[in-house]
Length: 150
Length: 150
DNA sequence: GTGAACCTTTCCATCGTTGGAAGGTCAAGC
DNA sequence: GCTTGACCTTCCAACGATGGAAAGGTTCAC
Image 1 (cartoon, rainbow over the protein chains, first blue to last red):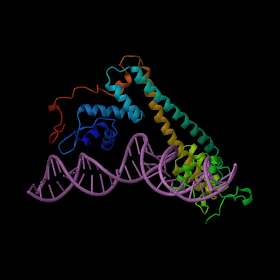
Image 2 (image 1 turned 180 degrees about the vertical axis):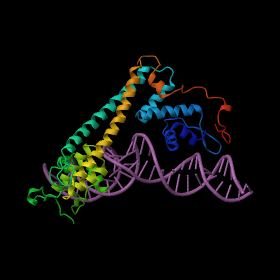
Image 3 (image 1 turned 135 degrees about the vertical axis):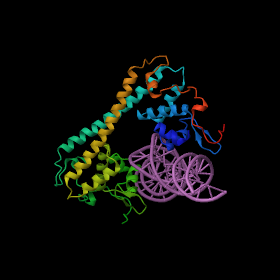
Image 4 (image 1 turned 45 degrees about the vertical axis):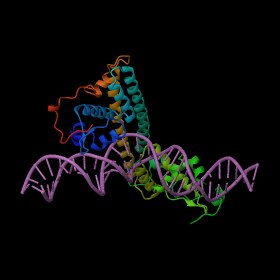
């Protein structure tokens, strides 16, 4: 099978398959004399594994570790579980962050009229002062050293 | 104020301040004759705005739009609200995806013994077959054109 | 006048992915 | 045999946001 067929079969683009090979995530495919990559069913299994792990949000590094365990018949399932649960913890941290953001934004937006008028609590919250507020007189600013251009 | 002071005052690294200037998110700062960037209180207000928007997960593009509205006294709050709610929708999509991932993983992990034995539903789910499964005989595979190296 | 602490620009790297350019290969139709 | 189009190859660049290092200039306090 050529790389294009494999891409269709696995849902990973040919670009990415080459990239995964470059970065060592998957083994280099055999080549025809003319240089085309040739894939076996076994390679496709591996790529499907990669695809599913990717869909679960694992990083390439984690996928690498999982692949190693997958190939290791003497593995301990505890090792697999540890990677998975570590990843779950990461995902949940990310989720908490997103949740906080959405809650804040929803709260601000709920107080925004959303009409033709400029008043908006969202902008009020983002900036304390008007953006074009007059610059304070020079004596109130820390003196700059040297002269200003422009 | 020099860039370092501004970095401290706004919580944005000097690196990022220069980057925002390069990419046009913020206006180019004035310079002293020796080339140092000089910031006014007004600039700092803008950067604080950027910082808060960034903390809420807005992309630089969205922050750009928000800044434009912020500076526009004739804005309609509806435009601001639309950006915010669009962003909320994106965040919630992301959250749903993460939630699905964690649920899948938690489910798989809950069925994993996490002991010394190799059997693991997580790996089972990722790969349908054993990675080193024997390659099917040649006649079952699509014939490759040309000869194989290696 | 010297040293520390700043500042400047430029380049490189990250992560996962996509795109393009320039060129070689293959199969099919004529 | 020749052309065409679909495939393949490598290399190079970009995204977004950030960090880092190198190599050099500036400012300030002692």
